[in-house]
Amino acid sequence: MFLDRDATFDKIDSLVADAAAQGAELVVFGETFVSGFPIWGPVLPPVDHHELHLRLFESSITVPGPYAQRLGNIAARHGVVLSVGVNERASHSLGQIFNSNLIFDRHGNLVNHRRKLVGTWHERLTWSHGDAHDLHPVDLDGWYLGALICGENTNTLARYTLLAQGERLHIATYPPAWPFDQRADAPEYDLAESIRLRSAAHSFEGKVFTVVAATALDQTAIDTVAGGDERIERLLRSTPAVSMIVGPRGDIIAGPPEGDEGIVVASVDLHEEIVLKRAHDIVGTYNRFDIFDLRVDKSRRPAITTTDTTDSASAMSPVDTTLFYGNEVASDVL
Image (cartoon, rainbow, N blue to C red):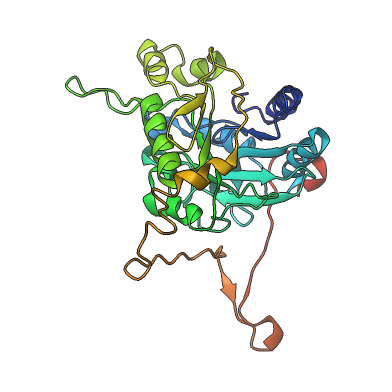
Protein backbone atom coordinates (compact mmCIF):
# COMPACT_ATOMS: atom_id res chain seq x y z
CA MET A 1 0.00 0.00 0.00
CA PHE A 2 2.05 2.88 -1.45
CA LEU A 3 3.67 4.98 1.30
CA ASP A 4 0.88 4.02 3.73
CA ARG A 5 2.46 2.17 6.64
CA ASP A 6 -0.66 1.23 8.60
CA ALA A 7 -2.53 -0.01 5.53
CA THR A 8 0.58 -1.95 4.50
CA PHE A 9 0.69 -3.75 7.86
CA ASP A 10 -2.98 -4.65 7.55
CA LYS A 11 -2.25 -6.10 4.10
CA ILE A 12 0.76 -8.05 5.39
CA ASP A 13 -1.37 -9.61 8.11
CA SER A 14 -4.06 -10.56 5.61
CA LEU A 15 -1.65 -12.01 3.04
CA VAL A 16 0.29 -14.00 5.66
CA ALA A 17 -3.00 -15.49 6.84
CA ASP A 18 -3.86 -16.40 3.25
CA ALA A 19 -0.44 -17.98 2.59
CA ALA A 20 -0.49 -19.89 5.88
CA ALA A 21 -3.92 -21.24 5.03
CA GLN A 22 -2.36 -22.65 1.83
CA GLY A 23 0.22 -24.47 3.92
CA ALA A 24 3.11 -22.02 3.63
CA GLU A 25 5.84 -22.37 6.26
CA LEU A 26 7.92 -19.53 4.78
CA VAL A 27 6.24 -16.30 3.62
CA VAL A 28 8.32 -13.76 1.68
CA PHE A 29 7.48 -10.19 0.72
CA GLY A 30 9.39 -8.06 -1.81
CA GLU A 31 11.90 -5.23 -1.60
CA THR A 32 10.82 -2.40 0.75
CA PHE A 33 7.29 -3.75 0.97
CA VAL A 34 7.09 -1.46 4.05
CA SER A 35 6.08 0.92 2.73
CA GLY A 36 7.07 1.40 -0.88
CA PHE A 37 9.92 1.50 -3.37
CA PRO A 38 11.16 4.94 -4.59
CA ILE A 39 9.92 4.29 -8.09
CA TRP A 40 10.02 8.03 -8.80
CA GLY A 41 13.83 7.90 -8.86
CA PRO A 42 14.33 7.02 -12.55
CA VAL A 43 11.43 9.05 -13.97
CA LEU A 44 11.47 12.37 -12.05
CA PRO A 45 14.34 14.86 -11.69
CA PRO A 46 15.89 14.92 -8.19
CA VAL A 47 14.50 18.40 -7.48
CA ASP A 48 11.02 16.85 -7.65
CA HIS A 49 11.78 14.01 -5.20
CA HIS A 50 11.58 15.85 -1.90
CA GLU A 51 7.90 15.46 -1.00
CA LEU A 52 7.84 11.82 -2.03
CA HIS A 53 11.07 11.18 -0.11
CA LEU A 54 9.54 12.77 2.97
CA ARG A 55 6.51 10.48 2.65
CA LEU A 56 8.80 7.48 2.27
CA PHE A 57 10.65 8.49 5.41
CA GLU A 58 7.43 8.98 7.37
CA SER A 59 6.26 5.49 6.34
CA SER A 60 9.59 3.88 7.31
CA ILE A 61 10.25 1.98 10.55
CA THR A 62 12.94 1.67 13.20
CA VAL A 63 14.63 -1.68 13.88
CA PRO A 64 14.17 -2.63 16.65
CA GLY A 65 10.95 -0.76 17.20
CA PRO A 66 7.18 -1.18 17.59
CA TYR A 67 6.48 -1.85 13.93
CA ALA A 68 9.26 -4.39 13.67
CA GLN A 69 7.72 -6.06 16.71
CA ARG A 70 4.35 -6.11 14.92
CA LEU A 71 5.96 -8.08 12.11
CA GLY A 72 7.29 -10.56 14.67
CA ASN A 73 3.83 -10.84 16.19
CA ILE A 74 2.33 -11.59 12.77
CA ALA A 75 4.89 -14.36 12.19
CA ALA A 76 4.20 -15.88 15.62
CA ARG A 77 0.43 -15.65 15.34
CA HIS A 78 0.41 -17.50 12.01
CA GLY A 79 3.29 -19.84 12.89
CA VAL A 80 5.41 -19.00 9.82
CA VAL A 81 8.92 -17.83 9.05
CA LEU A 82 8.39 -14.32 7.71
CA SER A 83 10.68 -12.26 5.47
CA VAL A 84 9.79 -8.63 4.76
CA GLY A 85 11.62 -5.81 2.99
CA VAL A 86 11.44 -2.47 4.82
CA ASN A 87 12.60 1.12 4.62
CA GLU A 88 14.58 1.42 7.86
CA ARG A 89 15.32 4.82 9.37
CA ALA A 90 18.69 5.16 11.08
CA SER A 91 18.85 5.47 14.85
CA HIS A 92 21.20 8.48 14.84
CA SER A 93 20.19 10.59 11.84
CA LEU A 94 16.85 11.49 10.31
CA GLY A 95 18.61 11.88 6.96
CA GLN A 96 19.65 8.26 6.67
CA ILE A 97 17.43 5.45 5.43
CA PHE A 98 18.46 1.86 4.74
CA ASN A 99 16.93 -0.67 2.37
CA SER A 100 16.62 -3.58 4.80
CA ASN A 101 15.30 -7.12 4.90
CA LEU A 102 14.03 -8.68 8.12
CA ILE A 103 13.51 -12.38 8.80
CA PHE A 104 11.44 -13.56 11.78
CA ASP A 105 11.22 -17.15 12.99
CA ARG A 106 7.98 -18.98 13.82
CA HIS A 107 8.08 -17.57 17.36
CA GLY A 108 8.34 -13.98 16.17
CA ASN A 109 12.03 -13.52 16.93
CA LEU A 110 14.05 -11.31 14.58
CA VAL A 111 16.77 -13.72 13.42
CA ASN A 112 18.25 -11.83 10.46
CA HIS A 113 18.54 -8.08 9.83
CA ARG A 114 20.22 -7.20 6.53
CA ARG A 115 20.89 -3.80 5.00
CA LYS A 116 21.39 -3.62 1.23
CA LEU A 117 25.09 -3.29 0.49
CA VAL A 118 24.80 -0.67 -2.25
CA GLY A 119 21.86 1.16 -3.76
CA THR A 120 21.55 0.65 -7.52
CA TRP A 121 21.67 3.72 -9.77
CA HIS A 122 18.98 6.23 -8.62
CA GLU A 123 18.47 4.34 -5.34
CA ARG A 124 21.57 6.06 -3.94
CA LEU A 125 19.51 9.25 -3.72
CA THR A 126 17.28 7.43 -1.20
CA TRP A 127 19.28 4.79 0.69
CA SER A 128 22.61 4.75 2.47
CA HIS A 129 25.15 1.98 1.97
CA GLY A 130 24.52 -1.07 4.13
CA ASP A 131 27.01 -3.58 5.49
CA ALA A 132 27.68 -7.31 5.76
CA HIS A 133 26.10 -7.65 9.20
CA ASP A 134 23.89 -10.77 9.12
CA LEU A 135 25.17 -11.68 5.65
CA HIS A 136 24.77 -15.34 6.52
CA PRO A 137 22.04 -17.97 6.29
CA VAL A 138 19.82 -18.67 9.29
CA ASP A 139 19.72 -22.30 10.46
CA LEU A 140 15.95 -22.62 11.14
CA ASP A 141 16.10 -26.37 11.75
CA GLY A 142 18.29 -27.08 8.75
CA TRP A 143 16.84 -24.64 6.21
CA TYR A 144 19.92 -22.39 6.19
CA LEU A 145 17.87 -19.53 4.80
CA GLY A 146 19.72 -16.59 3.25
CA ALA A 147 18.52 -13.34 1.66
CA LEU A 148 19.82 -10.84 -0.87
CA ILE A 149 18.06 -7.68 -2.00
CA CYS A 150 17.57 -6.95 -5.71
CA GLY A 151 20.91 -6.05 -7.32
CA GLU A 152 22.81 -7.89 -4.58
CA ASN A 153 21.80 -11.00 -6.49
CA THR A 154 24.19 -9.82 -9.22
CA ASN A 155 27.05 -9.47 -6.72
CA THR A 156 29.04 -12.66 -7.18
CA LEU A 157 30.94 -12.32 -3.90
CA ALA A 158 27.79 -11.64 -1.87
CA ARG A 159 26.13 -14.73 -3.33
CA TYR A 160 29.21 -16.85 -2.71
CA THR A 161 29.38 -15.56 0.88
CA LEU A 162 25.95 -17.02 1.59
CA LEU A 163 26.65 -20.30 -0.19
CA ALA A 164 30.00 -20.74 1.55
CA GLN A 165 28.21 -20.53 4.90
CA GLY A 166 25.86 -23.38 4.01
CA GLU A 167 22.89 -21.67 2.33
CA ARG A 168 20.27 -24.15 1.13
CA LEU A 169 17.24 -21.90 0.62
CA HIS A 170 17.63 -18.43 -0.88
CA ILE A 171 15.40 -15.33 -0.79
CA ALA A 172 15.72 -12.76 -3.60
CA THR A 173 13.59 -9.61 -3.35
CA TYR A 174 12.85 -7.08 -6.07
CA PRO A 175 11.02 -3.78 -6.76
CA PRO A 176 7.86 -3.49 -8.86
CA ALA A 177 9.50 -1.99 -11.97
CA TRP A 178 12.81 -0.66 -13.30
CA PRO A 179 12.55 1.99 -16.08
CA PHE A 180 16.14 2.43 -17.23
CA ASP A 181 16.92 3.18 -20.87
CA GLN A 182 14.68 5.18 -23.19
CA ARG A 183 17.19 5.83 -25.96
CA ALA A 184 15.68 5.17 -29.37
CA ASP A 185 18.45 2.79 -30.37
CA ALA A 186 18.56 0.81 -27.11
CA PRO A 187 16.26 -1.93 -25.87
CA GLU A 188 14.53 -1.21 -22.59
CA TYR A 189 15.77 -3.06 -19.51
CA ASP A 190 13.84 -6.32 -19.16
CA LEU A 191 13.41 -6.62 -15.40
CA ALA A 192 11.48 -9.91 -15.55
CA GLU A 193 14.16 -11.60 -17.68
CA SER A 194 16.93 -10.18 -15.49
CA ILE A 195 15.26 -11.64 -12.42
CA ARG A 196 14.94 -15.02 -14.12
CA LEU A 197 18.60 -15.02 -15.18
CA ARG A 198 19.90 -14.03 -11.74
CA SER A 199 17.72 -16.53 -9.93
CA ALA A 200 18.56 -19.39 -12.27
CA ALA A 201 22.27 -18.60 -11.99
CA HIS A 202 22.29 -18.61 -8.18
CA SER A 203 20.14 -21.71 -7.91
CA PHE A 204 22.14 -23.64 -10.51
CA GLU A 205 25.56 -22.60 -9.20
CA GLY A 206 24.73 -23.16 -5.53
CA LYS A 207 22.26 -26.05 -5.99
CA VAL A 208 19.72 -24.14 -3.87
CA PHE A 209 16.07 -23.21 -4.14
CA THR A 210 15.42 -19.49 -4.72
CA VAL A 211 12.22 -17.79 -3.60
CA VAL A 212 11.79 -14.62 -5.65
CA ALA A 213 9.41 -12.02 -4.23
CA ALA A 214 8.79 -8.81 -6.17
CA THR A 215 6.42 -6.03 -5.24
CA ALA A 216 3.56 -4.83 -7.44
CA LEU A 217 2.95 -1.30 -8.72
CA ASP A 218 -0.69 -0.37 -8.18
CA GLN A 219 -2.67 2.47 -9.74
CA THR A 220 -2.28 4.64 -6.65
CA ALA A 221 1.50 4.56 -6.96
CA ILE A 222 1.38 5.26 -10.69
CA ASP A 223 -1.01 8.19 -10.27
CA THR A 224 1.02 9.63 -7.38
CA VAL A 225 4.31 9.57 -9.26
CA ALA A 226 3.09 10.32 -12.80
CA GLY A 227 0.72 13.11 -11.81
CA GLY A 228 -1.18 12.71 -15.06
CA ASP A 229 1.93 12.68 -17.27
CA GLU A 230 1.27 9.95 -19.86
CA ARG A 231 4.95 9.46 -20.67
CA ILE A 232 5.87 8.84 -17.05
CA GLU A 233 2.93 6.48 -16.63
CA ARG A 234 4.07 4.55 -19.70
CA LEU A 235 7.61 4.33 -18.29
CA LEU A 236 6.36 2.98 -14.98
CA ARG A 237 4.35 0.28 -16.73
CA SER A 238 7.08 -0.67 -19.22
CA THR A 239 9.27 -2.92 -17.03
CA PRO A 240 7.18 -4.98 -14.59
CA ALA A 241 8.84 -7.35 -12.14
CA VAL A 242 8.03 -11.01 -11.62
CA SER A 243 7.79 -13.40 -8.66
CA MET A 244 8.73 -17.07 -8.94
CA ILE A 245 10.36 -20.03 -7.21
CA VAL A 246 13.40 -21.56 -8.88
CA GLY A 247 14.81 -25.05 -8.32
CA PRO A 248 18.45 -26.16 -7.94
CA ARG A 249 18.65 -27.05 -11.64
CA GLY A 250 17.85 -23.45 -12.55
CA ASP A 251 14.29 -24.28 -13.59
CA ILE A 252 11.17 -22.33 -12.59
CA ILE A 253 9.04 -24.61 -10.43
CA ALA A 254 6.31 -22.11 -9.49
CA GLY A 255 5.08 -18.78 -10.75
CA PRO A 256 4.84 -16.18 -11.94
CA PRO A 257 1.36 -15.30 -10.64
CA GLU A 258 -1.33 -14.97 -13.27
CA GLY A 259 -2.21 -11.36 -12.40
CA ASP A 260 -0.36 -8.26 -11.29
CA GLU A 261 -0.71 -9.43 -7.68
CA GLY A 262 -0.80 -12.94 -6.32
CA ILE A 263 0.80 -15.60 -4.15
CA VAL A 264 3.28 -18.11 -5.56
CA VAL A 265 3.37 -21.40 -3.60
CA ALA A 266 5.61 -24.46 -3.92
CA SER A 267 6.78 -27.40 -1.83
CA VAL A 268 10.52 -28.05 -2.03
CA ASP A 269 12.88 -30.85 -1.01
CA LEU A 270 16.17 -29.32 0.09
CA HIS A 271 17.90 -32.71 -0.16
CA GLU A 272 17.94 -32.43 -3.95
CA GLU A 273 21.29 -30.65 -3.62
CA ILE A 274 23.09 -33.81 -2.48
CA VAL A 275 23.17 -35.61 -5.83
CA LEU A 276 23.48 -32.40 -7.86
CA LYS A 277 26.58 -31.34 -5.94
CA ARG A 278 28.37 -34.50 -7.07
CA ALA A 279 28.91 -32.69 -10.37
CA HIS A 280 29.57 -29.15 -9.16
CA ASP A 281 29.91 -28.05 -5.54
CA ILE A 282 31.40 -24.56 -5.78
CA VAL A 283 31.74 -24.31 -1.99
CA GLY A 284 33.19 -27.81 -1.68
CA THR A 285 34.99 -30.24 -3.97
CA TYR A 286 34.57 -28.03 -7.07
CA ASN A 287 36.69 -25.25 -5.59
CA ARG A 288 40.35 -24.58 -4.84
CA PHE A 289 40.64 -23.05 -1.40
CA ASP A 290 44.43 -23.12 -1.72
CA ILE A 291 44.11 -20.66 -4.62
CA PHE A 292 41.09 -18.51 -3.77
CA ASP A 293 40.59 -16.69 -0.46
CA LEU A 294 37.51 -14.58 0.35
CA ARG A 295 37.42 -12.44 3.50
CA VAL A 296 34.24 -10.67 4.63
CA ASP A 297 33.93 -7.92 7.27
CA LYS A 298 30.54 -8.53 8.93
CA SER A 299 30.76 -5.72 11.47
CA ARG A 300 28.08 -3.04 11.73
CA ARG A 301 29.95 0.23 12.11
CA PRO A 302 28.56 3.07 14.27
CA ALA A 303 28.51 6.69 13.14
CA ILE A 304 30.95 7.59 15.92
CA THR A 305 33.15 5.83 18.45
CA THR A 306 34.13 7.77 21.57
CA THR A 307 37.01 7.37 24.00
CA ASP A 308 36.57 8.35 27.64
CA THR A 309 39.96 8.42 29.33
CA THR A 310 38.38 8.79 32.75
CA ASP A 311 36.73 5.41 32.61
CA SER A 312 38.70 2.58 31.02
CA ALA A 313 35.63 0.35 30.98
CA SER A 314 33.87 2.70 28.56
CA ALA A 315 36.86 3.36 26.33
CA MET A 316 36.15 3.04 22.61
CA SER A 317 32.46 2.42 23.16
CA PRO A 318 30.12 3.15 20.27
CA VAL A 319 27.39 5.74 20.77
CA ASP A 320 23.90 4.28 20.53
CA THR A 321 21.37 7.09 20.34
CA THR A 322 17.87 6.37 19.08
CA LEU A 323 15.89 9.20 17.51
CA PHE A 324 12.18 9.03 16.86
CA TYR A 325 10.38 11.16 14.33
CA GLY A 326 6.84 11.42 13.14
CA ASN A 327 4.18 9.11 14.46
CA GLU A 328 5.55 5.58 14.72
CA VAL A 329 3.66 5.27 18.01
CA ALA A 330 2.59 8.07 20.32
CA SER A 331 4.92 7.04 23.13
CA ASP A 332 7.91 7.23 20.78
CA VAL A 333 7.47 10.88 19.84
CA LEU A 334 9.93 13.26 21.53
